Length: 307
Image (cartoon, rainbow, N blue to C red; front, top):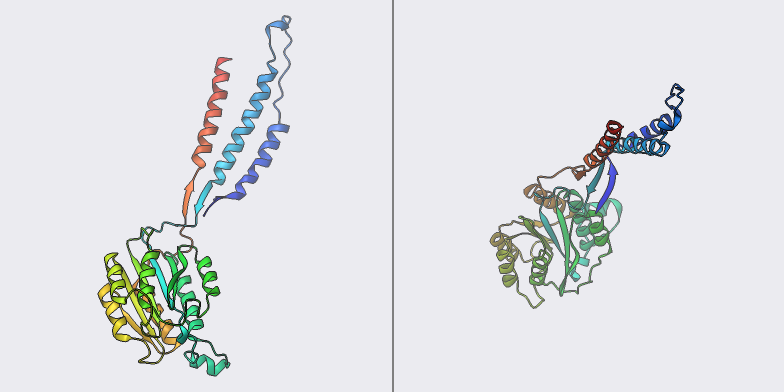
């Protein structure tokens, strides 16, 4: 989303003393008496126009000093960024609690695996400053909860609305990968990544993980797989195969702390070359105002020469 601004907006205040001086500090001409007054034309209309042009020149120069710009927040020089899709399991098993046992013992607050997965995913999204991120939710089927975008606030807000069971109670890993690949349809990024999280085994959907993996490899999409929960709950063999054949890595988390560390590891492995929130694309337009002021100044000089 583009918006207009000034690099040095406070310089606009220079206009007030300049225009005041042009109006009040008038040049005093010494009267010259001449008999044949009809030879001298006052040409008042031109002097009025001349004053307006002078005011316009100073206005243009003051605005040029303030440096008008157009700032692009949608894609701030994102030539080296990555497109990332987070595929999050929302099946029935993700409603289990006890995953974040350390915090639960301290606070007596029980969060489900799905709620913890959303919290950790939110932290990961907010760190991907130079990347575009999308979210796919899956259970019996998969759907794109948030398309790939640079607007992190929108993704985080959309993520907060997602609930366990929205896509059914089973686990369609093949559908999740295929839908994530579809999310990259309009992507122009050189680096495309899927982070697939699940706590179960593939047991639903019309697309097998093997066929979906072929689609991802064909599109040169790297897949990082994360198994979560107690050992043996997630299909580690399948997740390892998906990661290895796509060029990604496999991780396993048995608690929330390990899950955070895994996302941090992925963040380091896939670090973007853009790491500054202030790195925005700015288009400068001060030169147009300078050219307009110069054109008006040349007009005045030309009139003076002709006189």
